[in-house]
Amino acid sequence: MAEEEQPYQTFASLYDELFDGQLYDDWADLVKEQVPVGKILDLGGGAGRLAVLLAQSGYQVDLLDLSSSMLSLAQDHAADAAVDLRLLQADIRDFSDWEERYPAIVSFADTLNYLPSRDDFLAGIRQVYEHLEDGGTFLFDVITPKMVNVDYEDFYYNNDEDPEKIFMWTAFFGEEENSVDHDLKFFLYDEKLDAFKIVREVHHEQTYPLAEYVAMLKEVGFTKIELGADFFKKEADENDSRWFIRCQKGATK
Figure 1: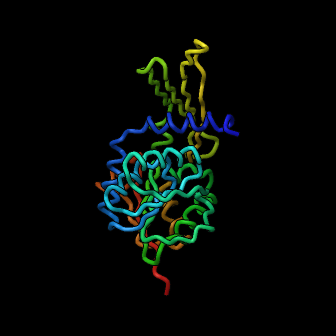
Figure 2: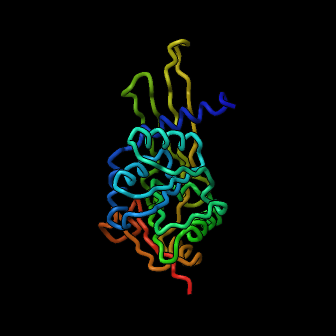
Figure 3: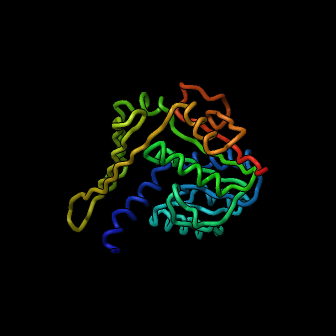
């Protein structure tokens, strides 16, 4: 089993290294602006970069992710930063066995775009609703149809700054409307073989028009839905590449 998991552990580590650290700082700043210090769930928090920043700012952070490899990295990052994170391995669409309720749940870095269909998205946000306290805040971001259909058209990115670890990223339109497939490849030099080996994953993302996000949130029961772009520095519109959404679980009557 360990041998089967190794490629995914390797990919998780490499993928973690790719992310721009400034983005995590920006997400952390947004949470601190929008959510009082207290208990919080980082949904699909991956390798824990955001969770660590929030914990360092005084939040009591639980992190949920499906990937055991990502959670292992999160544990390492938490140990390096000398903070405590509670880690939960579960599917965003069903973590009903987890009975904790939160005043705030956050989810960034396209996490909800990885849910492959409208039904999956609804299942995910229903779980969020069920795990919020009455009046609790849900804060998240998504990529937009403009990002998928314009920004990712004919998109490719190659990084060969490290000659022993080359990264290639190509994006293709998905079969579903407003979807994209990311073909991610790392070419890693193996000194023993004097050759490169490939570590590859294909990531599928799905998004929807802004009005449909609002409709789905209302369908689940969310209220006070606020829409923005550029970390809420501007109003959301169809020309944005990423939307930020804040909503609330209505108090039970």
